[in-house]
Image 1: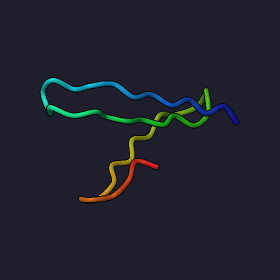
Image 2: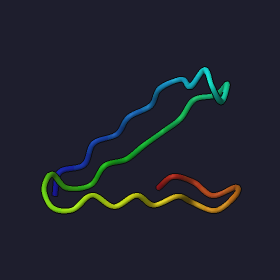
Image 3: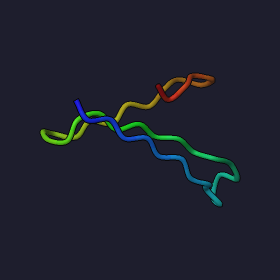
Length: 40
């Protein structure tokens, strides 16, 4: 399975934002962790 990791600064939030993408095909799904949770 293909895994991609992104980290970029968000001027709107004033902090670094991290994102992990699993796979390369199929229907996209967005998961948002609860407060205080980690992105992975």
